[in-house]
Length: 165
Image (cartoon, rainbow, N blue to C red):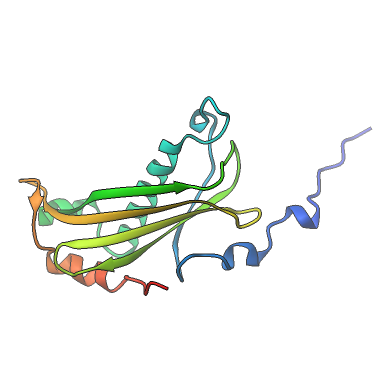
């Protein structure tokens, strides 16, 4: 007797609307992630530090999509450094789950400061598992001191700021 392939029930298949709706802000820049065995902690769920790592990854991915990568940062001797980061862990995630992490630039003065927000959602049902917020400051990489954003940062980042609801 041969095994019949498992066919997901309609209730197991994420609807297209499961993730289209429910984002905190419009048009997120997204990264698909899934916890690996080494991401699971002693409580048998994804360790919170993994969420922080994913936020860094999606933040860089968004910056690259906006036209600024690490080589640009080095060439300009400027970087957006995290001054404050905060995370609200709402629900756990588990090994192998399909997750989507969205990010937005939600504020910025075009001079020194910028704000980035994050929302992690489970792909199967659209539930929000984590929300995060970074306050960023532009620094001179060589000196590590706050410096005004170069025109390249203002042009790329300020144009991407979404309106807060």
